[in-house]
Length: 134
Image (cartoon, rainbow, N blue to C red; front, side, top):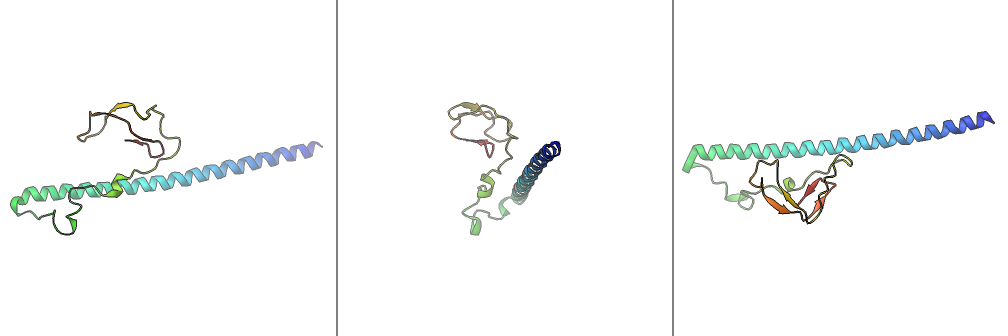
């Protein structure tokens, strides 16, 4: 009887271990996919900004002889951000701290080096999965 109880306990422990390993592998795979997406997003973003800086330097150096970038096939998108840059990359569950930000809260923009820094506004939407708010 003791052997039967011991074997049953062992089987339960093995099943629990298998489930834990499967959960960890699934979480690891998800983390790898999200990290890869984040790297691609950052690489594309960096390429866009490097190209914009290069074009700005070229425009300044050439002055009135600078190429017209607002005509031709880029006329519709000149001076805009590509749509893929507007979509944020989803984050891993459990990494985001709960800040207590909800719709209708007044917030101040900090930590950006853009013109929006220091602005105060009302939160319209909170997306915890992508770790963004509008």
